[in-house]
Length: 103
Image (cartoon, rainbow, N blue to C red; front, side, top):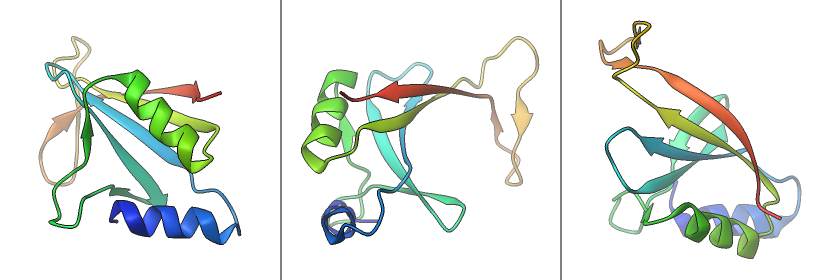
């Protein structure tokens, strides 16, 4: 979902979407996804590239500007010592979800 589509959805005022802030082990950037019809849709720019942020504070500031007060921080660690889970595509990932208040 493009960032401007997300802003339009939020401005429509019907309900606030469930937002996820994604961070991957070994990367120093964050990205956002929105839950839409029980699937996570990454937030992209007009060219279809994922919108990334250099710090968690920048993501929180962006969410605040859109009126989002709560999000879920999802940490993805493929190097988990307890044996990562395998997705349907065969990629090994391990997710850790944390509640994130943007207020």
